[in-house]
Length: 217
Length: 217
DNA sequence: TTTAGAAAAGTGGTCTGACCACTTTTTCTA
DNA sequence: TAGAAAAAGTGGTCAGACCACTTTTCTAAA
Image 1: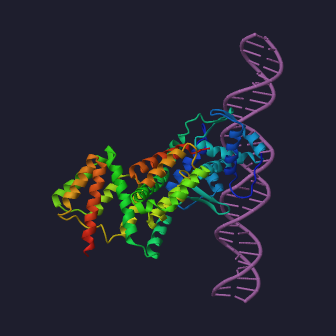
Image 2 (image 1 turned 90 degrees about the vertical axis):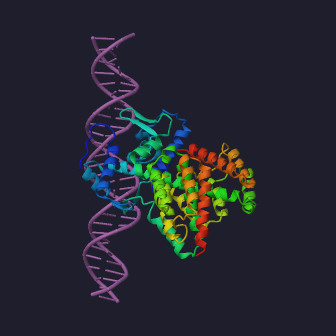
Image 3 (image 1 turned 120 degrees about the vertical axis):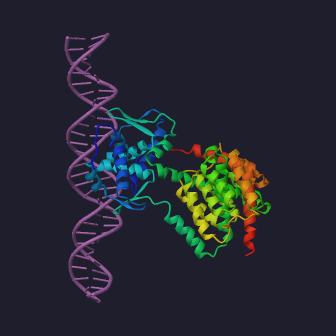
């Protein structure tokens, strides 16, 4: 295992490497991860760099360190993230939630508009979206929502939406997993049929799922 | 400024001290914070400890570091948003429809949120609004909607709403006439009861009426 | 006087090595 | 064999040293 250090942010890379290490060695929640010195040697970096990465993860509540004992993966319930965020940086955290919530407001309305307008529902883009979904089984949430927002024909909303997307990028931007696919399929179906309420309901469900399933480490 | 180091987590303390420092020195979003070396000296700790704290904040997206430049407080709202919005509206001769429609989207959602939350519905502001309406029979639309948007507790939406209100000011900003009053009354009533669908329906009706009245001009 | 370029200072990024305080493991007694 | 002492391991912190890059300052030419 080695790390390139071409550009920027060693500690970010280390976080990433750490994640791979935990996966590869199958370290369970509550399990112990290698010592800082060992990590430094294995990852071929200085101990202080390892520590900077670990401290970040600790602040996020993802790991726990015991002086003289070692470093351990936090016993599940990573919901701590939100807690820690709100405890430490109250205003900023609510701002971030505001961003994502605002974006959802715009998305919801775009769905409403498209779903309620037959012409918009018949746009060829939905068919190709469905084809993609069936063929590849995977599709980025933002790609879907972008098409819907574009279709709703409010350029100002589109601009704001893109802006919010950039700022709130930590959540909601993943790819659809197998688990999400049936919901996503239902969502698009309802949308194309024009069942506004059902489409929005599926949308909420889908979003909820994405939010939960986000890999933290 | 000094730090005790009795037990546990120097870097947590530093994060806390850092917050105080930013507050005390009134460093604005986008502003520069003292260099790592200066912080280390002022807080009477080692530079690596300062760095561990900073790295945590960076992972949270609260600060931004530029190699050779310094460390800055992340500036994620205000300027850029306002800028983009204004350039959009000023440069591209935009149809006001977009502006007003977008504002309506936000308003509609604020109504939904307030109407669906008992705590928000019980805010004393609605009572005084009703009193005003009965006593004077006249009330500005924007005053009503502002209260509702504020109550919905999304500061970002509030900011965008205010902005849109400024740009789209030729419409929707009138006072309630006798004709509108029963609808407005119904709207607020439904809102306070928690009948979301009915409230929004009344809202649409009310808005429609206002819109017509404007068109005459 | 102005300004373009070079030098210096400042700053984050990383590494090394050194202690300390504490915990876990091992070893050595009684 | 059990208990205590020693050793090893581990996180916590600090100091100093380079490096790469940016910003500021200074200098010399136009």
